[in-house]
Length: 72
Image 1 (cartoon, rainbow, N blue to C red):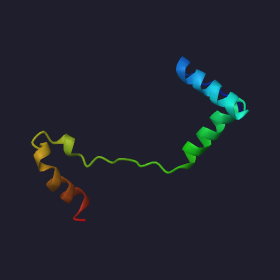
Image 2 (cartoon, helix red, strand yellow):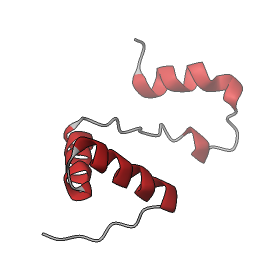
Image 3 (cartoon, helix red, strand yellow):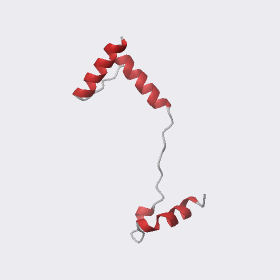
Image 4 (cartoon, rainbow, N blue to C red):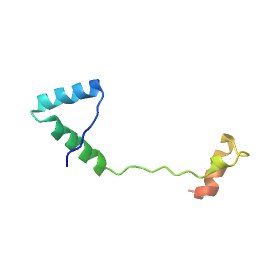
């Protein structure tokens, strides 16, 4: 599969320089980088819905989290 990737001028220059130093085509470096990045687990952050209640404020953070996630 072929895919166009748009990079900033600076990032494109860095990629070109790194590829030249390593003796690899830029496409190979991009594939390696993406493969490594996409194979790592990434955290997903979940909202406890506190922002939906205008009566709550940041001073109640501990209590909100204890209720939503239970004591840990």
